[in-house]
Image (cartoon, rainbow, N blue to C red; front, side, top):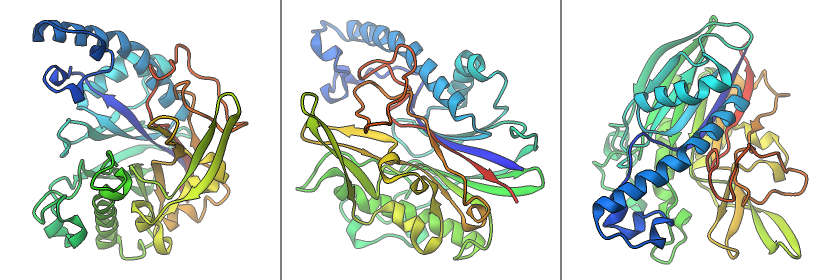
Length: 368
């Protein structure tokens, strides 16, 4: 008996318009910045037209990426609400996979933009085992103080009574046939821009490390410090990496991809001492990336931000299995190492439309 699990940051799966760019130029789309608007009403009309014209192609590609992942259980990030998820399923996913995901879970979290965590599951796995959602727990309310995880390096970024998770840690207990499995769906603090002389990753690292420690504490408090022999998967967008491929060169002379290890961060908090395995590390070093990052030719790299971390009880019987990374929804601007190029989905743009800036990660696990 197997279950296939995937994680995917669908990038702003929203059903509302954002008009804040009229008063805040930093929130304004680059297309809008080409025009002068005489009134807010004119800006709103233009923004609606821009968003609607882009959305159909974008969500077709999002659905194609989900269909290609072909998961029994799909962990999602950046979803507005259940109604939005239903609309996306009815309008797009059904055309790709039919009546596939009958179980849906979403609880509003802490993000000020209203991007939440969600989980969708089929009624049965691809090999016929029944999937049941047993219990759903949100940890959005957890504070640094309550978790005992406030530290001096958080000063200036958070207070002890602040909510610890920037979005949530969505804990979902499921039953696959007769076997139990717990999923922890997360979306950690984004890196942001350089600040106070530090790069964005370093500046925001204490927040993500605290989030990772909180996830580990939740699991340890429930199952024991070593995981208690239980099956669990920590899935989501960590907004952090432990290695990256630094890109140099140019179109004329060719591109070069150099592996570079990163300092300790949120990922290693959860993989230390064998607490969980980052299954993507089973792939070759040059082929683990799930996101292309660039701030122009002087700052470009590929890295893994999207994770399936599986417990020792789950990985023991899955030593020979490899995860899949779905990259066909990446925009054409993404630079691929030689030999990794894929056929993009129809109508993919240079920068947009695209399925997402992230790639889905999926893996089939034996439930023994």
